[in-house]
Figure 1 (cartoon, protein in one colour):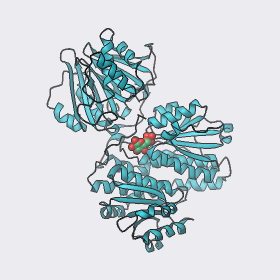
Figure 2 (tube, rainbow, N blue to C red):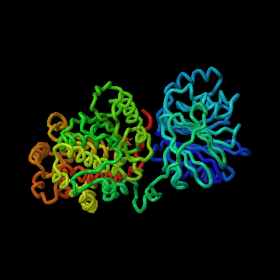
Figure 3 (cartoon, protein in one colour):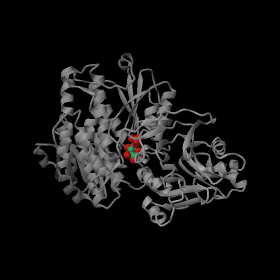
Figure 4 (tube, helix red, strand yellow):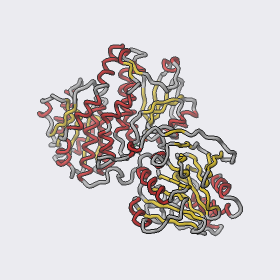
Length: 610
Ligand code: BG6
């Protein structure tokens, strides 16, 4: 996914665009560019491969004070390799129109051929460039907004676009279909952006655009239309996060800040949702009647990446405590697999950003087949939140680090509450519920204990040059092993795999020798002995064992080379603790390897293209 931004107002556009692009850079950082428009000066375009700093080193030398209108883009490459030519904004043949785009034009090849035979000259390998030439084609006769709509009518795919034209130099036209777009209303002008992070510095007043909605923003006003250019009134909403939430503070990286925030974000996720005296959870927003809740026959979690791992843990917990069958689906596979859906199915989509295209497409597929949809998301007003029938915000605050951390533990916290909520309507007693809830209230303190322990840094020093890692866990710790491996892959680029510990002997054990670090999650629970057996199998092949163990377990040193302790807790809550040292291990290994932890190569915070 890319980040787009547009500004029109009294401020120096270049400044507002640069600040916005800095906040959008977690959406993609393959290239960056701006286009500024002024009646006298005309169109000014600058773009560079790589990060914003490359562009700033160029534009900061230029006097751009005259420009109060502009659009900008930070790229996550889909079509055409990351380079300056393929960077946005793209311009038309006459260098009068400039456009930025987040999304994919699926029928670009056909359109490109038609435009070429009509004499248009293409300079890039991107799908996006066809859009600006299409608009150029209609703009010969039609006003800008009509040209944009005429052009988009012939486009298959997804888009959030912003366009400026030298023929109508006092406006920006923007349209959304499939990719997120918000509008910010500030004292000094209008800001259009892919998400609220780019707007918060200037205003908290935002308008969320739906698919098929068109913005025409002028110096002192803006209008929003449907795709037939009927004027539509939109609700102005308030952003409830403060700017500090998206600052790094004293931390070197957003990822480390967000790992350390977990001692409070887990609390934020259960605040106001626990009823200790009844041993139950209060989950407003589910939008499910009592009858619908008791008629749930099956739950299907749908997600991608780290959110998918949260769904896997949901399967273990809900099946064990609420005795409801659960399935967990990769959104991209569910979307095209023709899944069998039945009456009594409840689909729960999990997405930190609420904008991941694969998950959104799966949601729409299930909804189209009459299934009730519940969303578990972090971003207020996100598309998944708005298109779900009901849902739960995880209240983890803005997550900027591309590798998800605090959102994961907040997703797990909400899934624990959902488990209690469903189980208390079945077998779970108020006492059992109260026991879990009072232990849940102690989790933030236990996370702090883990964060204060620096053993993991010493272990990172020892293994930072490893070429491979294996992570092993049993039960609900298997998804944690997957998550630990994913974190290491995402930010240190070391190949790592997660496996159910017992499954290791049916294949991956072939990989083990004295150079293979193997991380075991080996808590003192009812399958501890089984995990110890698996550790012995690794030790017999000289694998180097790092164990995540329960505080006070001294026996573990007979089986592991290195040990990171976590405080004891109930098994339903233990994934909230065991993941933290794995996040830190990946973080410290990546930092020691000199990797850009917050903007790891090839990744983006959430991918808004299928
Ligand atoms: C990837 C992110 O692009 O999308 C991961 O890099 C994330 O961190 C995954 O887990 C799913 O994103 P979301 O927002 O749908 O949870």
